[in-house]
Structure formats: structure tokens, C-alpha cells
Image 1 (tube, rainbow, N blue to C red):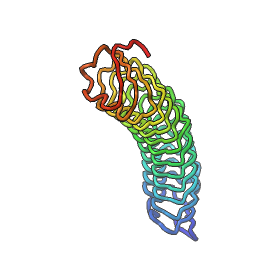
Image 2 (cartoon, helix red, strand yellow):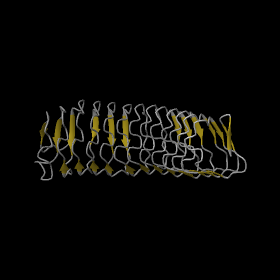
Image 3 (cartoon, one colour):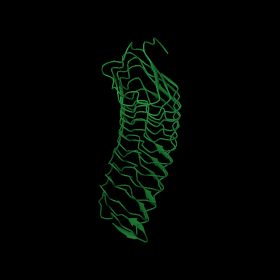
Image 4 (tube, rainbow, N blue to C red):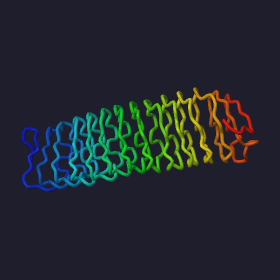
Length: 309
């Protein structure tokens, strides 16, 4: 195993360890057939590395294996890979395209964190879970096709994906983590699947172009700052199943003109409509005991005993 003229040359190895970690000379790594594992931090911070070819038969890519390889532009992971470690491509700032293997079940945490120029990502149909911060701060990511059997999106999974739009959440989804789509400026419409019981804190906070939100029956809780800063939000209907609305859930939703609060809402947090000019129609005959006294501490008009929208 050696480097000649910036090219990694391998002979007979089945495992690549981290002996090239931080190597400043390595420009190209063509991994031959026969290599089964790329261990943790194998090519971490190889800042000159531009080209990587991974062979069929490779089974494992370790944690932070290519972390900080800021000149790599494209990687195709062969379908023989069954496991990829946390942060494997984190900080690959020039990475534009990444194709993940068909057998992958979980997209690991921080897989492409801070891959600022990532344009395209292929997530295979078999994936059931997208880990936390997997694509956080992928500023250039415009569209992503989520697998039809996806069950979980982790915390801040797509946080800061400024150009992201056209996201379709599959009906199999049961868990969306806090801040999963925080500061996704390009989102304009989203429908929450029926299997989601709770939207966590800041799930869609800062989605300043988000205009239409569809919430299905079965949703129980809206977390703190759930739609905070959604300045273009004008169309949202709260389901009858809703029980709780967290602090500042709709703060700075300046285009929101009217909203109907079902009588089943037992808890209303502090300043839910901060800095909004919204007419709030409450189905309850009077303020429920579980509502914060400062729930409407803003320029809000509200009324009680409304039977429908």
C-alpha cells in the first residue's frame, strides 16, 4: 500500500486502515476489487483528494472515512455496501453527487453534514431511517426523493438546506425529529402524514417561503417554534385531534390571517402568535385551564364559542 504521484496503489489488501489520514499528497484513490472494508477515518482530512472509485464487493465504510475531503465532487457507493458509519462524507465541501447503495437501511447521522455544494442525493427505497443532521447545511440541495417506506427522519436531518423544495413525506413516516426542516428557505408546501402524532420543536421553523401546510387527523402535538418564522404561511388548518400547541409555535407568521383552534386543544403555550395579526377563532366556550395566560401576547383578535371555520 503506497502513494505514487498522488495516486494510491493497493496490492492484496482487503482492509484500508487510517494510515493515510490527513495525507496532503493523495489526489486519487482507486480502490481495487478485493477490498471489503474502509475503516474509520481512513481518508479523513485528505484535503487534496479529488477522485475516489469504490469497488463492487466493498461492504463497509467507516465513521468519518472521508470527512473533510473537501475537493471530492462525486462518489458512487457500490450496492455491496451494507453499512456506512456516522459522518462518512461530512465536510466534503465540493461533493455534488452521492449515490447510496440499494441495501442500505439507515442513513447514518451527519453523513453529509456541511456538504455545502451537494446538489443530488440518491436514497434507495430500502432506507427506513434518516439519521440526525444527515444532510444538515447542504445549502445547494434542491430536491430529494424520500423512500416510500421511510419511517423516521432524525433531528435536523435537512436543517439549513436553503434551496430544498418539493419534499413529499411518505405516508409510512411516524417520526420527524426536532428541527428536521429548520431553515429550509425554499419549502413552499408540506403535507404531514397521518402516522405523525407529534411535530417537535422548530420542525419547520424559519421556512420563510412555506405557504401551505396540511395537517392530518391523528396529530396530537405541535412543538415549540414548530412554524416560527414561516412568514409566507397563509393556509393551515389544525386537526380536531390536536391536544397541545407549544410556545411561539406560529410567531412571525405575518401572512396568517385567520386560524381555528379546535376545542380539544388542552394546552396553549406562551406567545403562540407573537408578532402576528391573526384572527383566532376558538371552539371552546372559554379559555381552557391548561392554556398559558400569555398565549396571545401580541396583536391578536380572538373569540370563543366558534363552531366551525
